Image 1: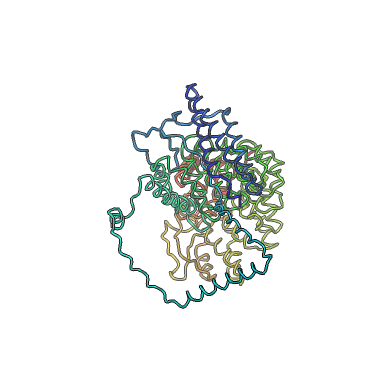
Image 2 (image 1 turned 120 degrees about the horizontal axis):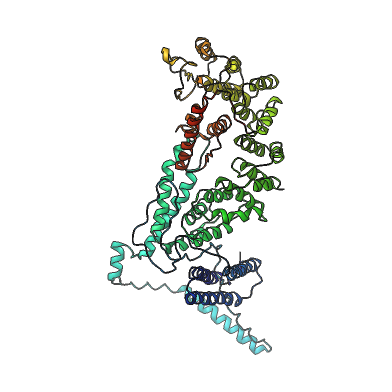
Length: 636
């Protein structure tokens, strides 16, 4: 902890005022007189901060470190005067309120562009201890005893003090005087009956603080979880955006004080950090973006949850300056910052192929993972040798992301790597068998037969349902009747995806009309059930009755011939969970030749727009050339 005698908070206030004057000077570029006045005020604030820091010498390591940081801040303020600067939405620096209320954010983050005063910069400082009171001066030493008379006098004095003490113990204590009840004043009566009077600014701050805490909680709740349906967060996202609007409506004067809420937490608060970054990046203006970046500089991006929160907030926020601010992170000294920068630019579709190539060659594994996750979204052509290096990496997470990115780019390198891993008994590594199932043509059946002969792993059994070849049904029934729980679960899921029978122990097997016969009629949604039956005899009886309708060589999904519309239904179904949507997206890209993005971590309304683009692409493809179940559209 830093030296408590250092006036850090006073110096911080002066630096904040100085930086604000820099913004105002930039905003007044067209008025020389006002610009000079702002620069003079800035210099005065800087000198005040310097005097405050110089008046208390310290050798405390924490204090010296904070002094160095503040010195860097002072230099940055001076340097920023010469940098280009613009306030989006206007160049006013006067305190003017908009004549009409701000428009509400509906379903999607939008840039809040209103006439406002420039933000007062703020940073969360660490909690500082109160300075200790100086110790009292020691009492003067008594004169030395040099004679016998002095010794007798000292002894007599001590005996008199002891006698007085003993006599005081024998005396009864005097009763305490009865205190009269003081009269109640009008102010006390009003406070007792109606509560303490609060100023409007304090009330607004309280409302804004409550909304900020809600904002952080909603930011956490909206994130996709493995078993949560993708549209489950839609209402949470609407409530999240209402909190942003409410905080902005409380006035710009509460924002610097909200930053100080971060100081009250004993440990860095991930949710509140997300809320602050998203809030400030929802306001137009470089001053607001800079405030978000100042907060980010105070956190440790090496902590995984904090890195995830910062990346998520900057990926979702609507501020147009985020890409420009984040791009220098790709060459930062700290590996965690490089990785976060790659993830942000990837999700914002601003990552270049050269950025991915440089990231894949990084010495830190976390950076390599982040770069591989951006392969599918990178702009430009990725050299085949770079892609091949990522596909053959030793880390499973890197290979999984590289397989997905390669197939989204419709590169046969991804298909061949998935085929090689599956045939060599490593179908579970990086989900290679699943990628092969959604991306191969009819020849992939032989690859799966080889894999099943070598090692019938649960991952390979699950992938057979996505492959869609009914010649594997008998094999799946055998594994369902087996004794290994993992293979039983995998075989059951594959049978349901192939047949769509939805068999349960509670209800009899479904009966079908002539128009609803499995494997013959057009696609209809499978019947959702709470729990599928694990009885192999029940599934075998159903297959014996209806399996003759299935044609060899046709690709099936849920008991119907597969078409892109089948995958499109699963992609947009409100009951879909994250994992199947990943495979369906890859499947559509490979089999229809579409390069339309689908950001599965984005706001629901943005995903709905991307789904509309996918619908248009699928419809146009079906009109041009009726797609076959096994057809693929790899890039040449």
